[in-house]
Length: 233
Length: 250
Image 1 (cartoon, each protein chain N blue to C red):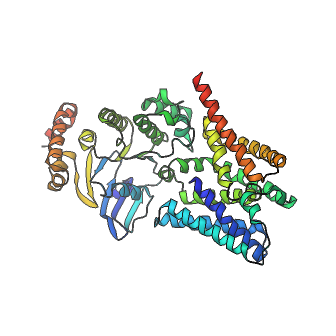
Image 2 (image 1 turned 60 degrees about the vertical axis):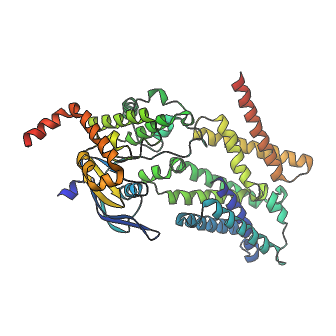
Image 3 (image 1 turned 90 degrees about the vertical axis):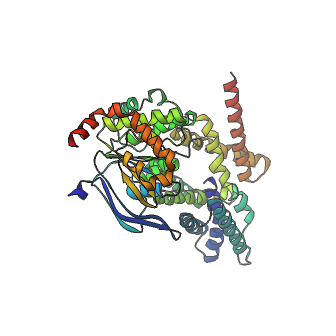
């Protein structure tokens, strides 16, 4: 399901295009399109017509392609590059406030539903037996992912958002002893990667997204090396 | 009166999926202190029946009634996401459970997993994981324990000790057990009722009755029926009390 995040990220470009085209603003467009995409996906997955991977592969790339077509229409003049790979220079102070709001909302949603999210991740039937409806939790997860995609799109870029969903968590997996620790350490690693990555992008004049991912992946390999050395002793 | 007393009562339950009849006119009642084992070939609808009874799945036809405030402990066949995140056994058993220290310690000693509680789930063996799943399902003192092929991934000695544990739980706790199992010859001693399922209920009753049922023999073969007879025989001594009572009635 890690690629569920990627698919939602891919669908966000359509939201960017429609948001500009209809004059509703980029953030609004992203949130509406990503949420609709997430719900459509959950519904199709529930009906079990296609396998999850096939479904994600088809829908995500369709959404990305339609997004690129919409943006390529002559009326819209934006730099697709900035949305694909992230460009910190496009972030306005208004966007910054949106990010603060998004972060608070995500922390709130995750911590209030933590144990249910955890149990559904471990086993959906176990969760059902204890009175959780996994559909609601999956909808919640879609909402959280949508917010994350919306607030990080301009910095990381939609092609690399998945990297930030997976790499810090994978690094943290090596170091943590409990799911709570893993979430906390992954968050710290994520913050550290973003700060260092932005410094790197200024230093070598590179786009912010790839710089952040390079830092994050370096930390990932270092954690493995660290683990390997500790086990050797 | 009978339906109100039952923990779960299903009448005329049918499930149709993709134009195929998965369950057909199932009537089943789970009462207090029942020990029911569901057997049947692959694709017989055993897991679907469990899902309907627990309310995970709404059948196309029929009615399922649950007793008010019925506490169900559910033990799935296995859990999938063990390696993607770190988690200790204690953390797993207690996640999203309201519990106190005394009942936790009680379950831990009952299932004999004291040496496992601080270990990571990812390092446990198949048998240890089954025990941990069982412990979790028992933490809230359920009225009904539902087990879906609990010993599927265990070797023969693991199966034996696991079913022995189930038998102990059944005799010590005030609990009903509903179990899907292929290892009928191993649960013969414990189970009070066997329900043979092949989309519809082929036969049901006491294990020794079911073993002689023509439909059972045609489904599982004579060998299984004979094997069950042997197991039944070796158990005579331990069930001597029951036999005396039987004798008096006859």
